[in-house]
Length: 113
Length: 115
Image 1 (cartoon, rainbow over the protein chains, first blue to last red):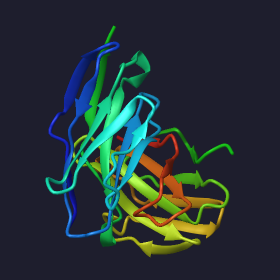
Image 2 (cartoon, rainbow over the protein chains, first blue to last red):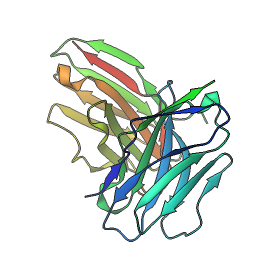
Image 3 (cartoon, chains in turn blue, red):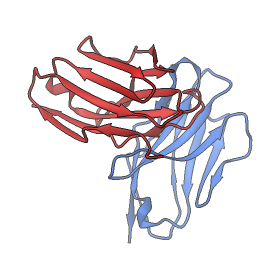
Image 4 (spheres, rainbow over the protein chains, first blue to last red):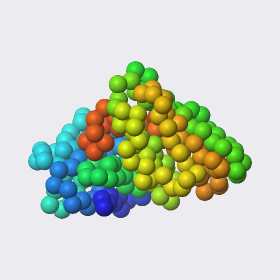
């Protein structure tokens, strides 16, 4: 079975600063995909960034980037120049094998103005 | 496209009543998923469809839960009879690609409260 662990239930960062959200996972698959989803107060889950495990280069989407450490099974999300609109729950997710997407429990990100 | 559309957005009902949640996926998406979100258990996959056919319903908690997809543009999740422990946010999501690799597009969820 696949597992995804987000060890930080809540994180707080000052506006314009950088914050890193942690995620570790476990899978027996050799080919898999990793995702970060954002869930704002409106509840709708929105894809932030996606990483294919076979790619060594870390994915980047504007202010969002990942640090993918395959050997360590770690997939952290870095948000640069934090903005008030970044405040949300962030979920790490793993796709691969027969289990489909497995989500972590989430990290609540607070942006301090 | 309008995105994944779910209804109702909120539902409050009494124990024992039947609940029907509805979902319209994004046109052209082959996969449809039903998830349940609670504080205790996080996001759980209940069932998913491929081309209107249920593929994996191993996440459906009990026989009280059933899901259908009569056509490519509509799906329902039914709970009968409902119980207080069914209180959660139920999400529908659709995807163009395989469930492991593709981006899931979520609806805004249906918040169910069973009294």
